Image 1 (cartoon, rainbow, N blue to C red):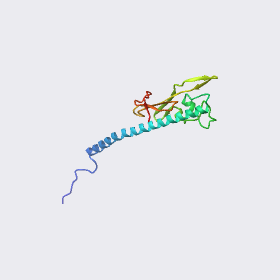
Image 2 (spheres, one colour):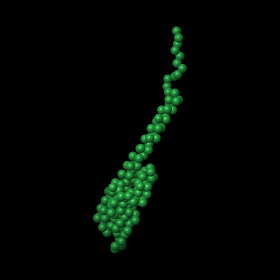
Image 3 (cartoon, rainbow, N blue to C red):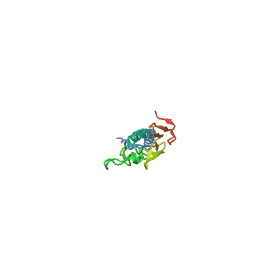
Image 4 (spheres, rainbow, N blue to C red):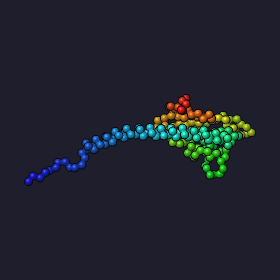
Length: 167
């Protein structure tokens, strides 16, 4: 009677494990850039929506506080809701994250305000709104700009040289 002797133990060989690992790595290198592009596109869409909202709220601010004209800072448009009635300094028109200037991988800036001073009150009759990716190519590809005319333009390089009109 002959006993069958098994040379291999059950389990995976080193080569099989290496093949499986390399297949997993290949799949990951394909999936990660796709995921990043989804994130970038989401951030850009969010930035455009935020710019539209700020433009709308600037219009609302202007009609609520005509003596002040437009708001020249995001904190002026912000302010904690329920911390008392809205004021010209904290109009409570935009959420806190946007008022802080940082949202969804983008940095928002309100600047370039032209003003006239009436009865010792600065009245802003224009503004420049920009949104740039915190990390170009990672958190977003395009920079966005707008102003009191509410048209949104973009910079394909991610800066504030907005030459292209957003359709």
